[in-house]
Amino acid sequence: RESSLGRWQGPMGITTSRLMGGGGASGEGAEESRASSPPGGKAEALHAAEVAPSGAEGEGRGGGHGGTLEGGGEPKDVPGEESRPFVRLSKQEKRQLKFERKRQAARELSQKNNKRQKKSRADRLRAMTEDERRELKAQERQAKTELQQRLKEGMASGQRVAVDMSFCHGDPAVNKPQEVSSLVKQLNYGYSGLKRSTASVSLHLTSYNGEVGKLLDNGGASNWFVHRHSEPLEEVFSKEELVYLTPDAPCELDTLRKEDVYVIGGIVDRTPKKGVSMTRAAELGVRTARLPISEIEVKNKGLILNVDTVLQVIQEWQRLGSWSAALYAAVPTRIIDKGNGGLKVARGGRDEEAAAPSPESSHQQEEVEKRDAAAAAAAAAAESESPAGGSGDFSAVETAGRG
View (cartoon, one colour):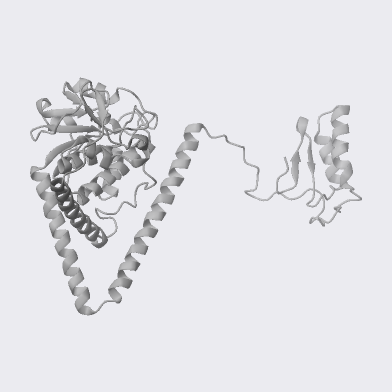
């Protein structure tokens, strides 16, 4: 192997010196190298074959266009330039390194987007008159106040939904940092959807401590209008009111009851592990149910939804009152089977087309859409006004595409 110093380590411990551009070793260097080689005809022949093309002619002179070295002979050793041993990374170390690079890139992208948004807002304000700026800021303050009031009312009296984050604690080999970070990202998506929606939800985050708690705090979760509990799920609620949502449950969820607390498992497993949330529910001794995924046509029959998607399904059911419509509105379109229109209604053991909406329902749908648009505008105004690192900022965690 040839390094920047021109040293070459050959087989059987033979060391020769080369100058840049194919220069030759001095006579002294050749003799010194030959003396350091082990005895034997084959080694001497190999050494001669390596030294011969150098064209050394006399002491202290190098051949080719490499020039001469000070004092002749071998190149001098430069401090810190010794050849380092090659270290092969394990698969886990490679994945961790890739994850850290992606998170750093996502953090830089988020900071860049924040700067661009602030600059765009400053340019827009500069183009306005003083009265227009005063009016716009008053409207934004009013929208932010209304949003905060709605979220506070949801915390106090909304449908209770808990995220069980106890899966994030334990053996790091099982609870990988990438999966914990992905859960934090999904919770951020879920809270953003909660701010845009008109549904009333009281969100509880249990086992809020450890690494997941630090990541959430860094992402601004300390400013969220949610309930944060450092205690585990079973210490926050009674077993009688808990309903654990798991895809392995034997029965489907028919409706949402105000007195129940619906639990979403805080699990992000890149390789799905069957029965994890069901095992947790059995340990707690609580009721279980699964979302009625059978009411929509999906490409993957063993579909497992993200935490933020399950939270959105609950909000859409409150808004629309239909599981098929709620699932169709919340489930990403990339996994909807469009061959059958996406929707189906199971009646009498057969699939029928959904009935066309009546004029009354169309009018109600328009009213719902108007309310949603107003709520989305209020959330956008609040986020544009919030400082960096606040509840709308997520620069401290990975913000790559949704899993």
